Image (cartoon, rainbow, N blue to C red; front, side, top):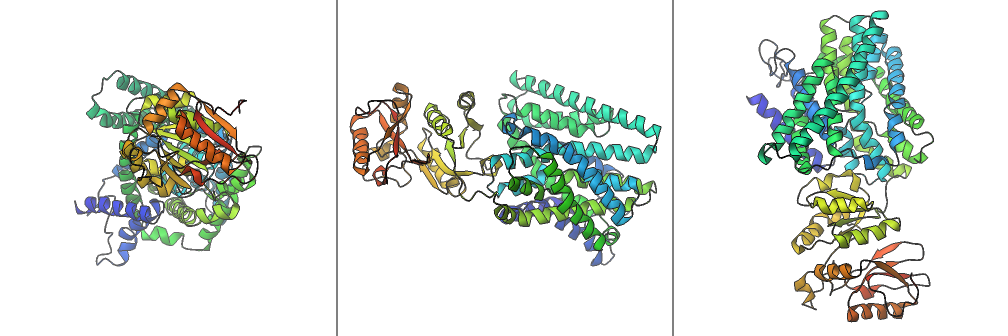
Amino acid sequence: MLELAGIIILGIIAQWVAWRFKLPAILPLILIGLLVGPISTLYTEDGSKLIEPIWNGDKGLFPGEGLYYFVSLAISVILFEGGLTLKRAEISNVGPVITKLITIGTVVTFFGAGVAAHYIFGLSWQISFLFSGLIIVTGPTVITPILRNIPLKKDVSTVLKWEGILIDPIGALVAVLVFEFISVGEGQAFTQTALVEFGKIILFGTTFGFTFAHALAFAIKRDFIPHYLLNVVSLSTVLLVYVESDLFAHESGLLAVVVMGMVLGNMNLPNLKELLYFKESLSVLLISILFILLAANINISDMELIYNWDTVALFAVIVFIIRPLGVFLSAHGSNLKFNEKLFIGWVGPRGIVAAGIASLFGSKLILRGEPGAEYITPLVFMIVLGTVLLNATTARIFAKLVGVFLKKSEGILIIGASKLSRLIANYLRKNNRHVVLIDNNQTNVDKAKKLGLEAITANIFSDTLADNIELNDMGYLMALTGNSDINKFAIDKFQKQFGENGAFRLVNTEEVNDPQNNPKEGLFSHTDDFIKLMDTVRKYPAIHEIDLKDKEHYDKLIDTSQEEGDIIPVFTKHPNGSIEIIPANSKDFQPKGEGFKLVYLGKRFAEEKEPA
């Protein structure tokens, strides 16, 4: 009981440490696992581990292969949660790159790392390629925390995010085929077995994932599942899909849950965000437990096997030669720039799937007496720990060094997706600004998406918004909801993260009626609250531009807008096309030279003779 409670407590402490110091959680988790596992044998009186994951006759948490069953089921939940976050709209620009990364990149890693392991460590070809198959995967559990803390161009973060989730089942598939090769033997028997296994994994993985996704969606839409059971029914369905698919084809369950998550994530499904919140919390707990267990399961003798310069050489070849080579071949001919390819080639940390399957296959082959099998688990863990440590500590520095770090975040995050917000966002998008709308009203989000706008259904009171890597380039924040409390909360909570260049909110009714109360974060003007803006948009749903002659002309237009009503200045547009948000103290703007424009919504100024 003490060990079980200790794992959970230590896991959550590690998660907090990772959050506090902006590190991937896997790093402190593995270190804790090693400390309570193999390293603890050096200072305990009887030489036993503080936490023994597998029952050894005296102590242990899981009998037989129980640990690996638990690991497999936990990984299925983690990958399903990752699949839910994959949206088709994200890959409009980089879809071919992602496809090549999980095909060409996989081939390069498989053969490159296999050859390296064979010649550096002298392992058999079978064991070398099993090792290379296991380190194909990167994984969302390690990629996402790194990307959260680095403002990158959206295409770069999208490539890394999608690769991390989609490549997990592919790496598992390759590892299974190599394992079958070792088990069955080479020649015709293996060829037949490999083809059959490959076909079964693809067939059953996609079929089960697609079918159960639609079945669960049908049940949710028809209200066959009560709200309080939605999360646990979804969880049990994920486990059912994984187990059923795995019974028909070994390791096809990973593909099945990813497909199921992707299908559900791209449906217009009610309560999807609640499902995501639940799965994310569950994933955090499972990851905390898994990495400590798997690291603790390593023996000190396993670590001594790879404590030499050969390990350093293998690590260097994989990280500095094979990974960049795979990325550059996969991104050849794409829209990605050289420095963006270089950064993607640098960031390739391995994660939970590699560690979990390595522990399973390594143990099985050791029991069968396969020469060199004892190297599988420690070598894979070395790659996992080494790549995570390297990327966690250098990714931000390397991003700045190669020039992919966004020095100034120009994206605009708009809280609220009402007609007002959609009108403003559409204008900004047409002027080449990255705009994202946030609303917990699905109808508003759907209307925004129909206009081609990027919109997310989210609750700003949830921490998930702060962790969304798609918002890494946000530098401006505009709170445009009809609820003044929500607007103020958005400014207080997200100003540092999303509003480093400016955070603004609509003034409320009380502030409008009190001329002395002009908040510094007030938006557009001191006299235009949400009700006034919506009324103007209802009567005049358009945004116009008017050329500015000088400062005096600008001040006159501002005065006119306040006197006449139904004219609301929103932005100033510079000669180079850049746009600035007009705050409530709007007369501070100083146009310098010609080519400046005032952008406003509502009816046209009387002096304007021609459409802008």
